[in-house]
Length: 164
Image (tube, rainbow, N blue to C red):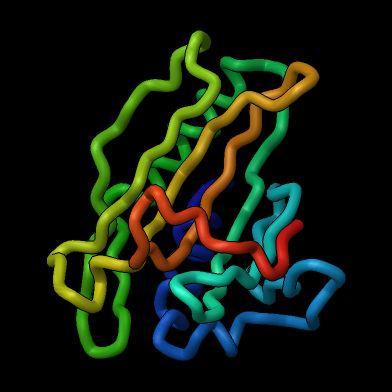
């Protein structure tokens, strides 16, 4: 994966003020193609959601799916190392991504690290970068990265307009 994830996340965040219009490809049945590619990823796309009565776009990358917990854990750690401290420019402001690290435990079915943009301000607070490792049936671990708006309460799930 080298620094490919960091490069992709930087591109997506820097196009955030444009509503990702420079990076969204052709619409599919349930998502939009991503012009930002990750050579080893199993899938990269933009998904349209409903959020507080408005339509928003999120970016999703499935980095790996494996039956081997140790392999997924290693990929999760490598992805974290790429994102921690990553410098991005959104509009005229510079930010760094920051998140504490949590070691994925075999007994946990879901581990999520949410990166904040620092310095925090009213504009950057709603932008979330998330790294996930989750267990899926029948016996697989998936590692993925997401970028999304989060200006609703956790108790308001929103309505998915398009999803994969």
